[in-house]
Every structure is written in structure tokens, then in C-alpha cells.
Image 1 (cartoon, rainbow, N blue to C red):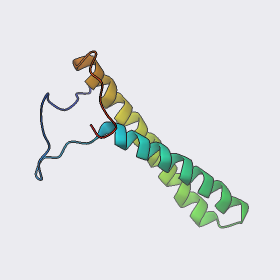
Image 2 (cartoon, rainbow, N blue to C red; image 1 turned 60 degrees about the vertical axis):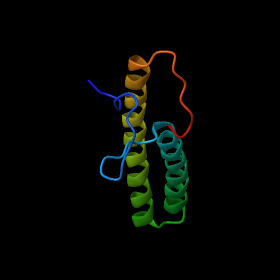
Image 3 (cartoon, one colour; image 1 turned 90 degrees about the horizontal axis):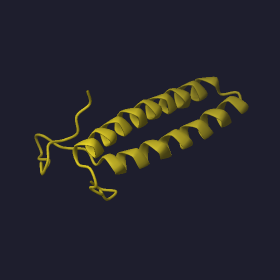
Length: 87
């Protein structure tokens, strides 16, 4: 079972907590950007760059799935709470 961060916990230098909503937005941006670059690279016959961008797009998809699961866990633990982009 995926757990969110503890309630009222603040990140520190030694134990940081992720801003899930911001991380979700950045992962979505990375997915779109890397997909566009991969398609472009394959069209101009630069296969190594296309493969690299496609790999980064896959990493972005994995991050999207992980972040979304953690957001669902947080929503389940804190029903009715609304979080800003940076929480």
C-alpha cells in the first residue's frame, strides 16, 4: 500500500518531502516534451537521440504513475483537504 507523507510533516535538508502536485506537472511537461523530441529525432534520422528521448518519456510515465498513486493515498488519508501546486 502506498503511503503519503505524515500529517503536518515538514521536509528538512536531511529528509525532504516532495511537492506532489508540482512534480506531477513537471512529469507531464517532461512526457510531452520528450515525446515530441523523440518523434522529431526519428524523423530526421537521429536514432540514438530518439531512443534517448523515448527513454526519458518512459521515465516520465513511471514518475506520473508513482506521483498519482501517492496523491491518491494522500487524498484517502486526508479527505476533503485541498493542496496547492507546491504542497
